Image (cartoon, rainbow, N blue to C red; front, side):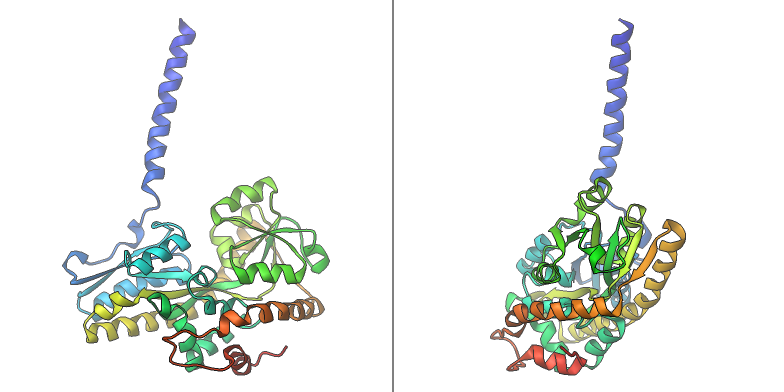
Length: 362
């Protein structure tokens, strides 16, 4: 009888615990720390804008910065309801919502953006636009080349306005990787994207496509022993709790492309549309520059908090990877050079023009 009472009590406790934590999980992440300092209910125009990441990333925080600056510049006429933390779903799912007009904007990763605009894959090509300095040159001085890049999803009813960053790509691993020979022993998680898969195939490395939410458990259980991502993201998302080594490759930048539903954007009065576009550009300039210092802060924190050891491959190994990457460039070239009816600039070989402008030598 006593055992039965204990069992009943235990079940009731478990039910209570499940109820409390279940409610917390259902509520999802809180945006209390980023609430607007104004009442958005009076806005004439509203734009729901999505992002998958944490606002501690400068590229993600841009969404809140755009919200606040736009409210100020339009005297409260436009309210950007920014939804980070994958609150609206995964990137591919949200891209479909954006295309259909269910939401109005998205700060989408350059990796996922290729699903609707393969030309975006230009910035994912290994060793092409792979530093803060190169990114700044492409964005601020690229002119028609950068404008053409932003037109990548125009044929899908989506307008690209600007781009920002979340650091340089490398390898977070559970074992030291100091050279290519070490890397060949690692099983890397990579994103579901054509350029990423092509890159790892050309480098002769063992890679598995895995959804981001599955990574923490996979790392802890040894299903994967390496992670292809930026050191900033690895630090912010606590991957360094398990992966105590980071090899700095700097072969590509982590980037968010600021995209909006064209029909919605064109529905704004001309003066507000102009203000909207300029505000997005101005905010992104600030956040791109802020990301440089943010990466350095994350390096320091990773060393001090998690005891992460940083490595760099030798010049010979990097040169070898660059040479192997030419195959990736050649394979994906047709997707980058493809022209669509709405393209205003119609180059015979867009990728070759980008090479020349960026000073990329094969």
